[in-house]
Image (cartoon, rainbow, N blue to C red; front, side):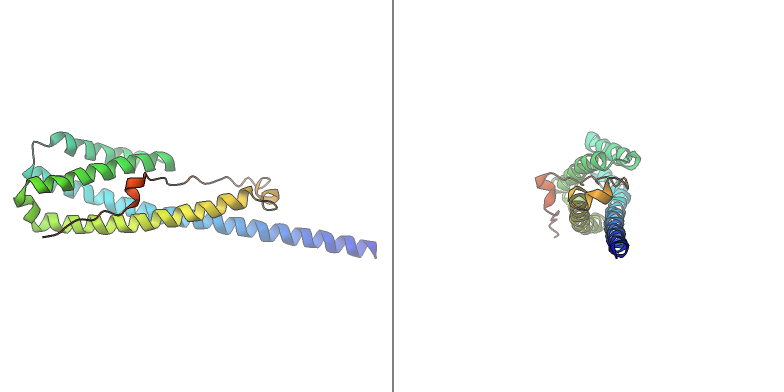
Length: 183
């Protein structure tokens, strides 16, 4: 009888461990999928930057420092692998892109250029999607990290070497989506 009770307890503990492990794997995969969504939006932004730089260059050639800074930030961001570094570079890139958009105010011909207006619309859409993807990713990270740190899940997470994921931080001003006025 005692052996049967012991077998039941061991079976319950094994089942509990498997369920916890599977939940942790599910959350880890959710974080990976959410990062993939961010990566897609960042790639869309990166693909748009050269077009935007060229559109502005044609009208505002003397703004060379801004154009070069945006191009350099894009290149550095593409080479970086760490979430925190990517977030910092993307914040700077976003600010640089906003400066490029602001240049349109000084150039009425650029502001009225249909290609430039299309780029502005696309950028606004990308920024909206990026903000949503960032929030979803950070929510998934929060859930995974909480599970890894919480009892009893940490009894499975630590031996199975689950590690906390890094948040994709954005400064407060970047939390609001880009709004571009169209004429």
